[in-house]
Amino acid sequence: MTQATQISALQTALQTIHDPEQFFSQVIPIVGDLLNCDRCFLYLRNPETGMSKVTHCWRRSDRYPNIFDPDWKPEPKGLAQDDPLFAAALRVAPSVFVDDVETADPQVVNRAFEQANFGHRALIHAHLRSEGKLWGILQPCVFDQPHIWSDFDRSIISELESALTPKAIVYVQSTNPI
Image 1 (cartoon, rainbow, N blue to C red):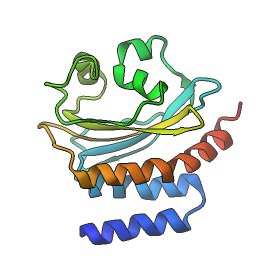
Image 2 (cartoon, one colour):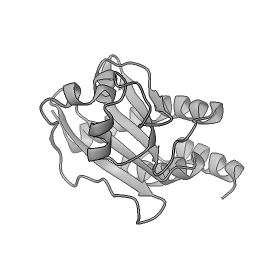
Image 3 (cartoon, one colour):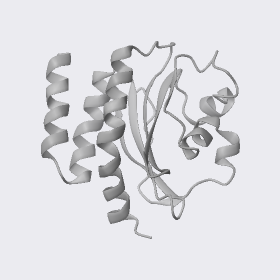
Image 4 (cartoon, rainbow, N blue to C red):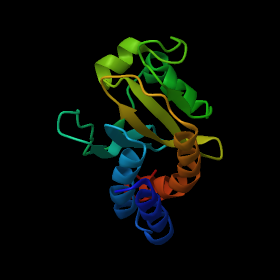
């Protein structure tokens, strides 16, 4: 797919698919491919209960680890202390673009945590938030080498944060009610 075709497919999905499950199933692979990533996953959470799961995961190939949670579960105790990216998301800080986990500021990225839990080398930690609450994280990532996130990548993520958040809220509220 060309970049123009991917953008068109993304815009069509944003405008026409109302069911969150179907929407995310179609959009997550487009985002991963459009941003030239190896993996892209969607982590959703209920900000009222702390229940969470990875609902969708796209991988360019089977050589990249699949991250998927079939069931809602409590967020791990101490996650915000172990993972500064998650702590930033909970503070509803702007999304974080990490070009290289190996050389990133330790106050921004816990390299050991990222390596142990995700294995990626570069990532975007896109925060899906509304009214001061974190509903999810979209995480496109690259393995094996650093990746400089372009202005194009940043603009796509900025648009997706706004477009995905309402669907994330509906998904969470319909599958994990308070």
